Amino acid sequence: GFTAEDFAEVADVIAEALKPSYDAEALKARVTALADKHPLYPGR
Image (cartoon, rainbow, N blue to C red; front, side):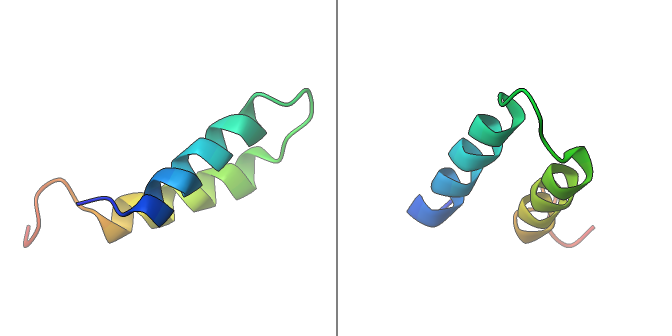
């Protein structure tokens, strides 16, 4: 159920993680937000 914007967010998170210096906590928050938006088992 990802939208184009969600895929763009995933790409941006990956690009940020590949930089020599990145904020791991900020990336973790972004990934958590995506996971919360699209749960594997909705309703559980």
